[in-house]
Amino acid sequence: METAAVEIEYLRKRYGRFEALKGVELSVPQGAVFGLLGPNGAGKSTLVKSLLTIVRPTQCRGRMLGERIGHRRTLGRVGYLPEHARFPEYLTGRQIVAYTAGLARVPGREARQRTDELLEIVGMREWADRKNGTYSKGMRQRVGLAQALVNDPAIVFLDEPTDGVDPGGRVEIRRIIENMREQGRTVFVNSHLLGEVEQVVDEVAIMARGEIVERGTLEALTRQDNRYEIRTLGPVPSAVRAELEQEGIEVAGDRIAVTAEDAKGVQALIDRLREGGVVIREMKELRFSLEEVFLKAVEAQGEERAR
Amino acid sequence: MKQFIAVFVDALRLLRARALFWITLGISAVAAILYLSIGFDEEGVTLLFGVSRFDSDYLRLGSPLAEMFYLGIFSMVIVNLWLSWVAVILALITCAPVFPEFMAEGSAGVVLSKPISRLRLFFYKYLAGLLFAFLQTAVFCLIVFLAIRLRVGTWNPSVFWAVPLIVLMFSYLWAVMVAVGVRTRSVMASVLASLLVWFGAWIAKTVEEYAWTAGELGEVPAAAGSMRLSESEQESWRDRYGMLSMAYTILPKTSDTVNLLQRLITVEGEQEFALSELLNLMATGEPERDDEVEAALERHSMGFIIGSSLAFEAVILAFAAWSFCRRDY
Ligand SMILES: Nc1ncnc2c1ncn2[C@@H]1O[C@H](COP(=O)(O)OP(=O)(O)OP(=O)(O)O)[C@@H](O)[C@H]1O
Ligand SMILES: [Mg+2]
Image (tube, rainbow over all chains, first blue to last red; front, side, top):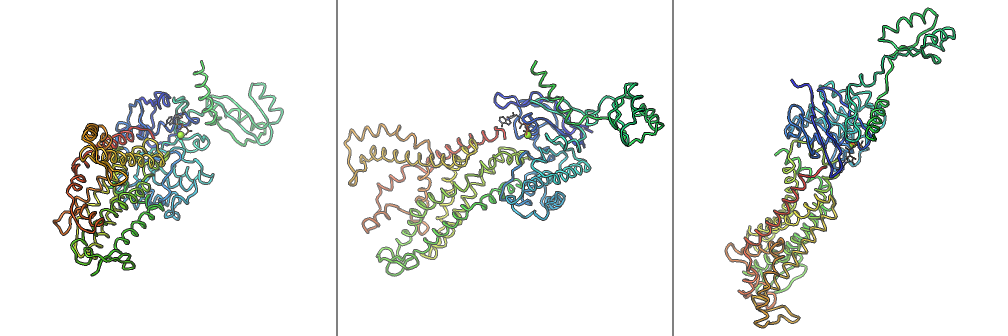
C-alpha cells in the first residue's frame, strides 16, 4: 500500500534559459488536501503542469498514484482544473463535462449519470444547458470543478480554484473540496490566497523562485513555541497585573501571554487568576498565521540567495 | 474511439457555432441548386429552370453531347471554380481556429492532462478538419449526382470522384494551416500562410506550364493566339525546364489534383470525358477531339501529381506534429 499519492524525487524545468523549477522534491500524502503556496511566478502552475504532461519537464524522477510520472493511463485517474480555465464558449456546461468524460474514456452511461450528479453538487444544474459563453466567471469555475471530477479521480489538481469567485462561492468551493476529501480523494490545491487555503488544507508546501522553501502539516508550521494566551473579561485588575508582571508575564489590557511546556503548565496561573476573582473569557495556544509563515519563508530564501 | 468521438464532436460544435459554417453551407446549396436549374429540352438548353434558354443541335434532350456538356459544367465550372476555390477557401477559414483555439492558454491543459497521446490528439484534430471538407463536398456531390439523373437521365457515380480529390487538395492547404497554427497560435497567420502556399503553387504551375509549352511544343502564348519559337530558343527552354519546374515539383499540385477529375469522370459508363472536345464545341460549334491538347493536359501522371503533393503534405504534417508534441502549454 502506497502512502504518498505523489512522490516527486527530482523535478527540474527550464523554459529556454529560464529555470522555473530548480530540482523540486515533494511528497503529497494520500487522502489529504495539499496546498502548494507561493508568490506569483514561483513555479506552482509549472509544477502541476509537469505532473500532468502539459509541459515537458527537463528532468523528472518520481511517481504518481504508483506509476512513473508521465504515465498516460494513470492520467485517467486524475482530475484537473487549470489556472484561468477557458472552456469553449460554444459548449454548454453539460457538454463541457461530457467532453472531459469522453477524453478520459468514461463509459457513456456512467458519464451521463456522473455529469448530472456533479452539476448538482457544484450548483449548476439549472444552468447546465446554457452556453458557456453566457456564464459568469464563478459559474465557469464551478463547471470546471465538475469536469475535474467526472472521471472519479483518485487525485484532483486545482490550480487557483477560487480565482475570480465571490466570497459566497469561495465558501462553497471550500465545501466541495472538503467533500472530495471525505470521498477519499487526494486534493492538490495551488493558491496564493492564504486565508482561504488555511481553512481547508492538511499539509502545505511553500514555494518561491522554483524551490520548495518550507513544508509540513499546517499544525506544525503555524505552531509557536509554547506560547499561550489568556483573555479576561475586562482589563486585568491592576493588583493582579503588577503581580504577574513582576514574574515576567506579559500583560496588555485583557490579554495575558505566557510561556509554558504545555497546556497543563498554564493551569496554575488560571487558578491564581480565578482566586483573584478574574473572569476568564478564553485560553488558547498561540499560532502563527499562514501568512506569517509564508512571508518568513519567502523572505528567508530571498536573503539566502542574496548572500 | 470514444476519444475520437469526443474530439470530433467538439470540433463539429466549434464549426457549428460559427456563422461562417452556415454561410458556407448556404452558398454550397445555392451553387448546387443553380446547377440543378440547368436543363435540356427538344430544342436546346434551358437555364434557371427555363427562365432563359438557347437552341443547339448538339445540346438538347437526349443528345450524346448533352451529358458531356452537363458534366463539363460540373467538372469545369462547378468543380474548378466553386468547389476548388470558393468552397475550399471557406472551409479553410472555417477550420482555421481549430488549432489556435485549442492551444490557447487555459484550454489545452484539460485535454492534454487526459490519457490521450499528443500525437493521437493531433491527428484526431487534423482529421476533424478533413472530415468537415469531406462532408461539405459529399453533400454537394450528392445533389449534383441527383441533378444529373434528373437532367440527362443517367446515374453517373463517377462525379463522386470529386469528393476525394477536393478533400485531397484541401488537405495540402490544411496541413500548412495546421503547421502555422501550431507554431504561431494565430488564426490570421495560418490563413495567410495557407493562401500564400496556394498562390505559390499556382505561380509554380503557371511557370512550369509555360516552360513546358515553350520547350516541348515550341510555342509561347502571345497577344494573338500563340507565337512559334525558333529551334534554338525552344532548345534553351527545354534545358531550363528542370530548373523552372522545380517549385512545381516540390509544392502541392492544387489545381492539377482537382483537374484529375476530368480523367476520372466517365460518360455513359465507358466513354472517357474529353475536355478538348467540349472546348472545341464551345469555340467552333463542332465537337472535335484535339489529341495534342489532351496529351498536354495529361503529361503528368496521376501518381506524380498526388504522390509529390502528398510528400509535401507529409513533410509539413510531420513538422507540425513534432511541434505540437514537443511544445509546452
Ligand atoms: N510557457 C512558458 N514559457 C516561458 N516561461 C514560462 C512559461 N510558463 C511559465 N513561465 C515562467 O515560469 C515561471 C513560473 O511560472 P508559473 O506559471 O509556474 O508560476 P505560478 O507559481 O503558477 O504563478 P502564479 O501564482 O502567478 O500563477 C514564471 O516566471 C513564468 O514567467
Ligand atoms: Mg499559476
